Amino acid sequence: MLSRERTIVTRFAGKTVLITGAAGTLGTDLSQAFAREGAERLYLVDRDEARLGELRAAIGRPAIAVRCDLTSVADMRQAWDGMDLELGIDVLVTAGGTLGSGKPLLEVDPEEFDQMLSLNVRGTLFAVQLTLGALRHRKGCIVTYGSTAGLTGSHALGAYSTTKGAVALLTRSLALSLAEEGIRVNSVCPGSISSPMLERNFAAAGAEAEMRRQIYRDLHPMKRFGEANEVTQAVLYLASDAASYTTGVSLPVDGGRLA
Image (cartoon, rainbow, N blue to C red):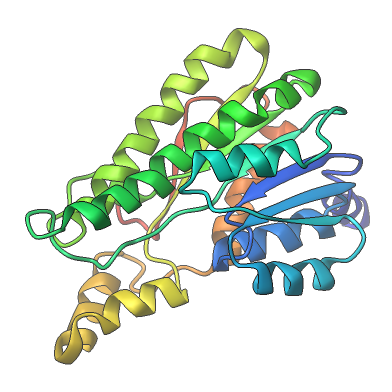
């Protein structure tokens, strides 16, 4: 038992990890987990400077906070130019994303849809492009954040589902493009995870908030919402050597939602 615990703690010893959306609920939990498991350097990318500062302070020495608007490719280029990536990146995780307002697809306005595409899809693609040289240097791996909503159609979250469906196919296409270089690309696809973003979606329903909450919960056969750490554990697996022959996969973490 002791030897197993020691292996877990040092799973990412000496590794350099870059996480976008690091200050969000899922990104924060993941960043702290990489630090606990021995990551030597953590680049934490997010536009929320205050929360980034808190996260960096909580993690300590391995963490480097990088303020960046992931909806702006120009801002991303500037942020990446400011990072010292010459020694390479072992793991890139693209956790930045937005659920949007929760409007049905036929009611979403162009500005909101463009914002969702910019963050969920373009932010993922260009994070990969900008990190690719550093990933090649170490034959690193990539984990994108998809969603179970991107693996099925959705009436209530049609716009979000559309953008996350694009992430699923982006992940598979990247996996095919990079397989011969030894760079694995996989996606973790959470179901409904307890978070402020999910609570905002419920609140948008007004008087029907509790009914929406119950509907979402009942979509999952386990009859509960997931926790951030349950998603984190799946990402750590996909980023580890234990998944050395796994690429192009969309891994649901959804309490049986897609069973």
